[in-house]
Amino acid sequence: VAWASAARFAPFAALVLAAHLRRVDRTLIEAARVFERNRLRSRLRIDGRLAAPGVLAGAGIVFALSAGETAATLIVAPPGRETAALKIFSYLHYWAVESVAGLCLVLAGATLALGLLCARLLRKRPPARGG
Figure 1 (spheres, rainbow, N blue to C red):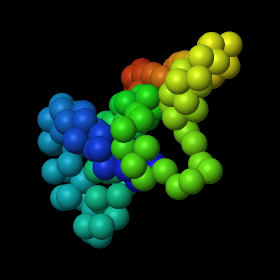
Figure 2 (figure 1 turned 180 degrees about the vertical axis):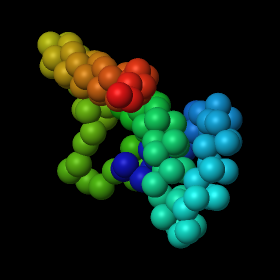
Figure 3 (figure 1 turned 180 degrees about the horizontal axis):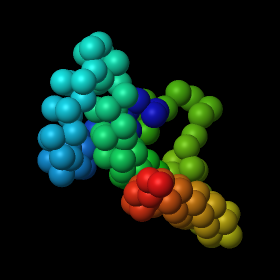
């Protein structure tokens, strides 16, 4: 189920990552390539850290979009397994309003918590002062 959601919403994450990578200062990457002997190490240490906020933002977008996904989940979910969105969809079909309200509150709380965590991790930190 997670693979279906990831495949369906990967283009949105790619757009977020591409927009982030356009804002990265290319001189930092060029300096890393000049001063780092190992090209793979340079890719992981410098490029990976510069791309990390974009990857995290893309993952947050995919999570938020896939939290309410029912179409692809109905197709690929194995019998006996349900996501929160499928459970809400089933309860709405049988008019179990109290259960739906509780599940929606839990889903909204989880999405809010993840969003706040992403915002905290993506927040710019002031540069350290040398002294």
